[in-house]
Length: 72
Image (cartoon, rainbow, N blue to C red; front, side):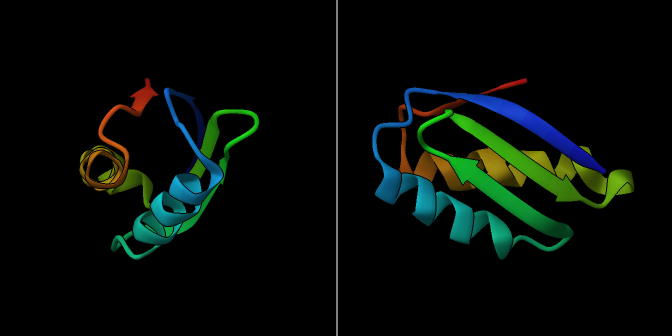
């Protein structure tokens, strides 16, 4: 299942790249793409575990960019 989310307060392209690499390592994530310019994240992951995966995505993002929020 692929979903696109708006990001808020993503401050730099380097942080976006770090977040993308960290999310890609999460079990169940098939692909992820973060656009700093558009402030958007597209994620494709296992549909049956999507909620659990997104909880881990939020935690990973907060470690790298504490002010960044994923708008659901």
